[in-house]
Image (cartoon, rainbow, N blue to C red):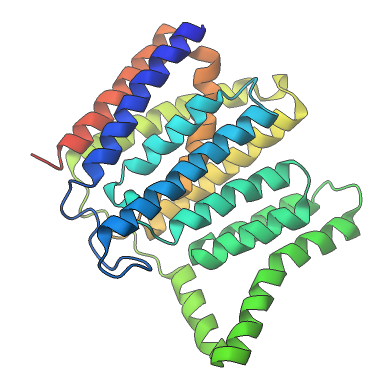
Length: 307
């Protein structure tokens, strides 16, 4: 079994490396304004890659520390990198990069029952990328639902969620005095839907279809054996499924012209669910066929940028 893991980890790692390198070679991958760095695409690219690596290592560390019996840490991180780098613009720094890193640790804090810290990190994530605002009410309800001490958990969760927003609003009021303008702009960004898929080609559609089919198979496997896992694993799987549904909706609604790496939102739940599935089935013929199909679809999609 370990040999099978080693083989596929090497194959997928090579594919991830190819995606990362070729992302810098695609002329229009970094189109649009570069966040924080003006016209310095290379500096933006270095910082973007560092954030992606930090997020991948965070996933590996969290998996190793908590639930490595059902989620292979290396597979989780590699699947995350693969999904992220499918969009070549993901190598360039954007508000999504720190937002996703905060989101990862916010989820971990939630699972380890640190509700205040969890909501605090998730709120910071939503401040960096406004469409993530829709996640906060869902996590808040889940935090309160079924809690042994509902008033205490409610206060801690609400406190963690509200404090970052209050601090920023106070800062804007005292320093720039543009609170109303900031709120209007923030809400506009949080609800500015742009579900455009006019720029999607056949290779990309084929790739998305393959990932969707494999993910549905993995979700089916997950629910068939959901209650055979430990309580913490069951809790994680349910959360990742909800994040997958919500993230998919966010991806569709905010994708726009594809220049913003919105696929980073779905990369985390997809990576966790695929890792759970392939960790248990890496040695089966069906899983090997799906991995081969995934590698082929990703390769064809990336080659389409150069042909």
